[in-house]
Length: 419
Image (cartoon, rainbow, N blue to C red):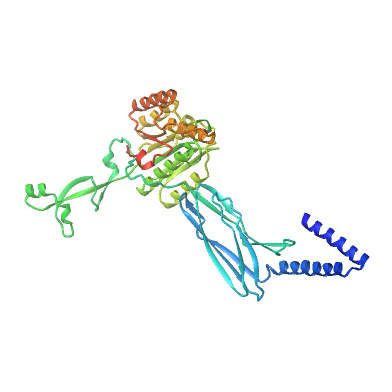
């Protein structure tokens, strides 16, 4: 607008001077200015005429680490070329969508593909396509908005945990939880005479030698217990920055454990103590997997409910025979008592804690790096207070025979949940 005011003022002065003095050179400048400005205006007005444009996103959801593909297409249906077009998609995606400046000849079409990584979980927005054009002198500008915006949901990264085993609850009469199966399983219930169709690898050779007839093994299928995951996102106990924070490591651990349990055909329920205490009723299958991922995509470390209170709230929902997985960075031992209450009721319990000293050390290293100091030595000892709290928590859980896993900021979950 300021440039246009300058141009208008200059043109007015030039016209007044030309008519006041009658100088041919000034009239030449007036005619040249009218031609340039008029041509620029017409070129800008025709810049978006007879132009077809659009974009397509290949997926509206994905996990951290995936890439989404956005395909752009522009088509000029007129005989007038488009010398300059600027195309840009405003978006809240952390990696963004790079814009492009192109030119289109008469009756031509151009398409290109952009791959952008999903670097952070959450809900993001891709706004309508913005197309802008103008004249070479920058006097005028024209823009248009094409299409409608779309929402993109980014789920937590799913890390494989092949060595993770969800402990089974100690139930009396567990034989009642087994059913006969034609598949080979570790649970051999009995033997019977061979029948046509039985595989040779099911033959029990000792029984065959004892009975004199071919005997084959019969297997039982043990029904897996349901899992209830309790994720602690209380603001007061969170540490770390970005992808190496206790929030992100805890969310990834919850996603990995839930995915592993659902693959094993377990019903999975979840309690998340985020901004509000969110409860997800136990269910199994792909539908429950989607619910879990949608819940974990939106949560942040802004909760106000301590893990002890979250456990107390979830006690009434956790049935006998289920397995409870507690994921928390809290070193406070007050939540061990409600967990022991669950175990005494026939609920298996397992705890995934955060390596708090390692997270604190990473934060200190980042602060020193920004301040221009050398990084902290990786071999520096842990803060004594946290080390003592960790030993006390571990001993409190060991009293009730509750297994504990310890996850760090850079350690892969496949290693942290293996031992």
